[in-house]
Amino acid sequence: MSQTLDPTLVVSPLGAPKERLARDEVVVIAVLALGAFVMVLSELVMGVALPQVMDDLAVSAAVGQWLTTAYALTMAVVIPATGFLMQRFAMRPLFIVTMALFALGTAIAAVAPTFEVLLVGRVTQAVGTAILLPLLTTTAFRLAPQGRRGQMMAVTTAVPAVAGAISPAVSGIVVAQLNWRWNFLLVLPLAVLALVIGGWKMRNITTPAPVRIDLASLVLAAIGFGAVLYGLSTVAEAHGGPARTVALSALLVGVLGIGAFVLRQQRLQRRDAALLDMRVFKHRNFSLSTCIFLLLVMTAFGVNVVLPLLLQEALGLGAFETGLLLIPGGAAIAITAAAVGRFYEQAGPRTLITFGAVLATAAWWVLSTATTDTPIAAILALHLLISIGMAFMWTPLFTLAMGSLPESLYTHGSAVLNTLQQLGGAAGIAVLIAVLTLFSDPQAAGSADAVSLEGMRATCIAAGVLTLAGAAAALFLPRRAVVTGARGEA
Image (cartoon, rainbow, N blue to C red; front, top):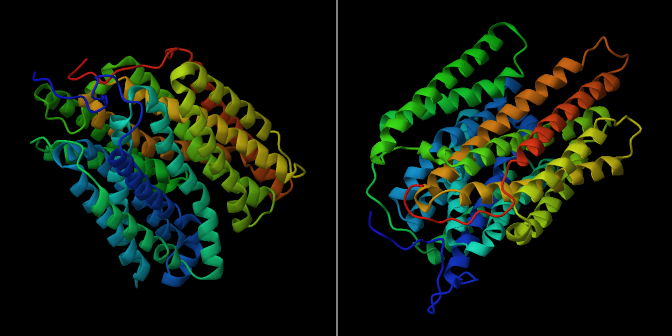
């Protein structure tokens, strides 16, 4: 195998590792981060705006939910192919096409005269988002000097977290003062700005390889990941009968599709032609990190479901007030991630991840004791502790997982992590909603608030159990930061 320069190791003229990124490399990461911020901000606006969209376009809740379900389905189908895209195309044209697709989808959604056109706009947005998020992770890791990878991964954690945290509040203000279309009209100039800056400043830092895409793998990925995500997204809301049968059937088809996809990748990777290279799982630290990461995203997505329900249904807050109360959690993640990134190399992944999991578990347990008399300030403080605990886990898990791989598998590792984020998030919501439904028995108490609160308590306990499992698994992680960047296969 010919030896090529490892892009993860930036070297000075004297041969010593360089401690800082070059100016053009900083620009590349900044442009990608701006694009990711805009995309995540737009991804999550539909939750608050959906009732107004349903009234304006005369659709039912079951139909309207497809604006979020179709977005997630598109993400799950496209992300497995991002490893191929990042190998096959240079960064600058890939970014331009990705950002242009997102801007086009945003424009379509803003002026959509019918629900069907709005759905097309959302799917087009999702294609761009699905490509850009793994591109940001892979690029940040490739460019980061060995001793600063934790800091670079902190960027990929903080940017989506802040966007996700402020999105509900921004959407609430927009819907209250204007209408749902302004959620897209306000994002569109930011998307165009990112596109213009990227087209002007973005540099190609990778060399495209003449790889070919396996169409059969693409079809199997679409069937497998798409069906699993659809089943997970609908099974919790299917109250028996045909709807439950359809959801369970989709899960079965999805599992079989993913199994067939994995078997095909194992055959194709023998000649380096896999769409998603399964050899990433031969690296112990990557496999263990992804297991803990899966538990993390299950509870992280659950926070966005459990806390709004607790604040609105049990404590009587409005949607806008709920959005405002969730903003500090996003800020806490951004601040904590930056700090954790600085200390990753010194403290090591085991200490940071275990501490974060234990902290979040304790906060979930205390939250499970909440009553209608619990002060809002206490709920806010517990949400902050949960967010901080997750931030202690998120950055080290990404850094350890990617750092456990040889350079040739970075793109595939990033695609795996981002795919699991979509599937794990859907699974977490399905599990927690199922617990909520099971324990919210109308016969268990005399008032709606009490019934809802019992369900919330059980859901918080379930989230705590998932997080505690992550803490137990973290004990098997290495004490020291893993330093790799080797070429070829390990």
